[in-house]
Length: 553
Image (cartoon, rainbow, N blue to C red; front, side, top):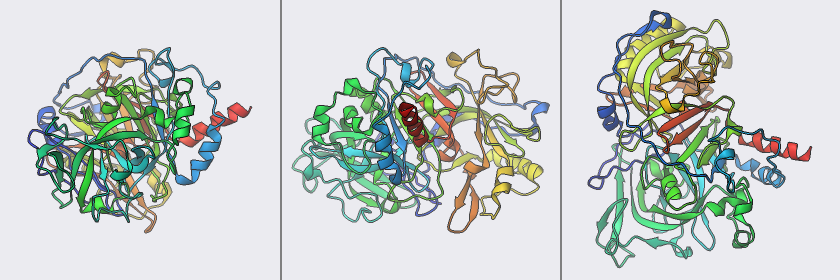
């Protein structure tokens, strides 16, 4: 397990990036210490049965901003295995929406009376992370796969002037800048740098350029030149949309569900064109990274500013498979511009977004350990009893960090309660257990502060999945997110063992990583300052197959 801390950054700017480990996942150590310094002055923990009530806590408030909402274009990118690509294409040629029930306001299907857009492209699972296809340049777009990372702001990948930059490990070759007619480097002699800092001309350039450099405590680093080119995400996995298709299809007449529509959401993206990478960036599966934090440089924000999507929001729906390959492994869905209710098994409920720095964060009010497992936030057996650990503080949600890291002060109480429930100590050592025993392990529940303006009074807190009515009578509208053992226990196919991946190694920061996010369609809504949660199997192919079947009927 490697950690990364950024060094050598441009003055007044912090840039965050993540790579992957060789087999097990990789997490980057974010600057959540900055987040927690302002959002968590203290974290108090004590173990007790829920019936005994809460102990003293410290309540913190995040900045809530009201933002304008427009009619929306929405882009959904399914995380698909390569073996499903041809089947997906065949099915989507007959895709029809007439079978879908009318959906609530705010979903992608009721975001305005204008043309409705949703693109279904391909995303995949890396070594503990999730990545999306990014097609760059003209006249023939080149594919670069990029990790979807809510903990960083810059999109970057290796370019043709990068030497020994992991081409044999990555899914694709380097981006050939000479083959793109629309590629251009930022000349900081005539314009300002937005991602890095101005430096004298480097090899291959006759003018000053904007340089971006990132270094990490474990030894990895990368350097890049700030550049701009036309890009689109998703689309066909094994080939770009041709210019002929682009010219002959009227984007306003489709929903964007077909991968062939991806070009219609293209825009000019500023990114880091990497000319040097070291360490784990070389051996990761994906080519680069897609920054998705709250920043003007983030992919989704640039997409919004360019008018490619109409609302400042996106959603991520993660699943996890036991292996990852260069051909692609199914791992969920990303939606740009909103969310897709077809993915949701339960009503979407909304937590308050903590507006600390550039991170998407939530206020964690309590952590529960529930005996006898269960996949959902609602118990499915009377034998499932919840035990409470009181905490209070803002925590970052980081899709680019594989694992979940809880405050060090919580460790003793967590481990004591775990031993009381299971009769065994909690550790991060690898274990051999049966699948039946895995399902019997405790489920960890996280209580998040609700977004006050998004409370739906029609939902019964004690009966609605995702609401805290059964565990907190005083705050029944708070959000409850389940993290079952199937999410926090990582399985090794090679050795047939499991490894717990909830850690207590951070002294002053905490992060809810990709294993926390699994099994949920999570909406990152910068428009309204909220983060939505809905339980989901994140299975895009079942949506397409059901739609095609309904069309044939």
